[in-house]
Image (cartoon, helix red, strand yellow):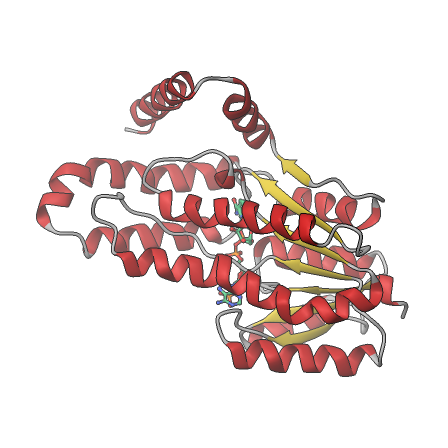
Length: 289
Ligand SMILES: NC(=O)c1ccc[n+]([C@@H]2O[C@H](COP(=O)([O-])OP(=O)(O)OC[C@H]3O[C@@H](n4cnc5c(N)ncnc54)[C@H](OP(=O)(O)O)[C@@H]3O)[C@@H](O)[C@H]2O)c1
């Protein structure tokens, strides 16, 4: 085991994290896969080579982060860590006018503060190996979609965190990248549907009067996005590129939808971009009715 070939990935139980863990294991990396449940640990271990080790970590728990990093340190036997892949994340939304602030806080706890805390805890090991940090962002970190704004806010923060870390670590030998997928077929969409339904249930009557139709439409959009999304393997391709290319690219867009939305937000004035998005949503609303 050389330090360059070691990776720690959070949120490896399902979806993108699982695909990355299994791919990196297949191509020879020593993978430390972060999970929260024993059954996920057992499933991953059974699917991978004996090199892969699971590590229990909830990224919102300071105690679990400390324990996970201590476990990593022991397993690395004095070597540094080749890469940290900050992947754990949750989705969630609701109309800005009424979304409970606690829903937004929870998204930031996992997607932003969790990512920050795990990065801080792993930096001594990453410095020792001149390793890499790869953050799982989203096109939602660049282009906002109404009614899932809390999620977009958290992914915008991931962009800032990644850019800031890259700037502050310039010259340290540590490469920092962000992966920006569009829709990917993973359980997050099903979980998102549930959280949107939960949000709808906790809204006052006036909110349902104003936004009920939109929330129902967005429930359908999530299912539609799941059908249209790229496979998590496509995201794993980008992660492998971010690990193996020197210097790595600062950002990796994944999927046609992500590339189109990034182009629109870069090239077009806001009002034109808004109008294109609202028209596309109205068309989709008619198609899905
Ligand atoms: N799917 C997409 O279309 C898409 C697009 C762009 C970006 N992304 C990003 O990709 C990442 C992975 O999402 P996914 O689509 O693969 O969804 P997923 O299958 O739901 O995976 C999310 C992972 O994060 C873990 N997680 C959630 N809360 C956690 C916490 N507090 N501590 C530690 N782990 C936690 C989950 O663990 P449990 O199983 O224990 O809950 C799971 O392993 C997320 O950051 C997401 O925002 C997804």
